[in-house]
Image (cartoon, rainbow, N blue to C red; front, side, top):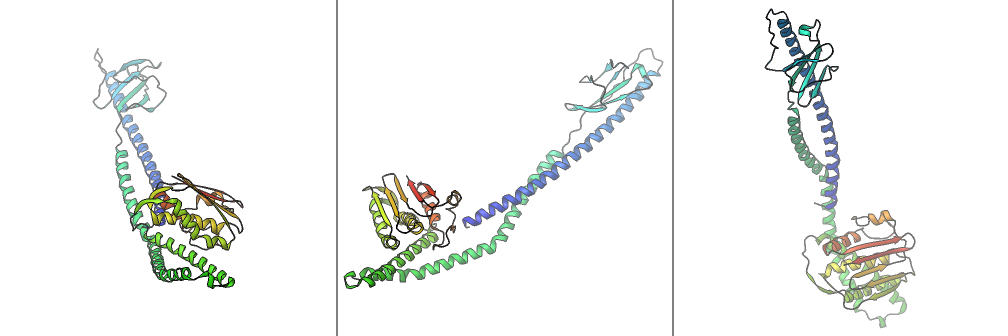
Length: 382
């Protein structure tokens, strides 16, 4: 699966799931409060019936001819009676109520209902009913249902996104196959051109022919470098690294010499301060790709007749140019594959993507400093 494809799937899934989860949360919350309101209403009606039952018992006791009165007690609820001045007469409540102005309310896990009496049986003006609140189990059911819905949503959305992205995936595979075939066909002619140019004797060429020969070599070098990038891009995840102790000093000198003809076309001055015998343990091909991309970008995007400064120490490689520079936004997006900011220059926009993959593998830190119309400086540290 391609990196861009993974990012697209993640973004689409995040958007789809967040909106779906928001809708589910809204519906479940509304349903929860609706059920809670229903429970409160039914609880109130039940306590109201208990209150009427208590009134009937009080009336029966009030009309009884017995000299001793026994306050009625009930299995399903507790109760209390208060006089007209809201003084307690008798109570079986577990929690005493002091505020008789509310009709229905909750205290802790109990619900309460207060009603007024007229006439005042046994001197009671208010009755209070206390009952343990009926638990609402809907919350556990909703949580379970929500988890099931979320899991189903994630699974279906994943397959839906993959189905939608299938045409894009097929096109990317076709593009990769095209690049593979193209690079394979380019290899032989590029190698042949460069090999034959090296065999030519400059002493047998006049000045005009020599300039043409240099142009051919520069163009061939550019195509060869692009070919190497494409090969690396295609095989990067299929070939294991063959790490060895590399002499970066010698390698950097060789790569600078490799790009000399390209620099001469633009009349660039390359100033190199290279510390001798700087070693680094890595894959030779990958370090070459790293150096080549940094140098070719510096040459490609700098102005004519300017300077390129190269510094190598035991812990640092720095390459700076005097070109058009980049904005902060461009620097933040520079590692995106196929990202190109200057369409006047050639290339596929894969150079910095290759750079990023190599520095991540070898834990190399990169710092890009750039000022518009002044130039760019790339610093690698390890």
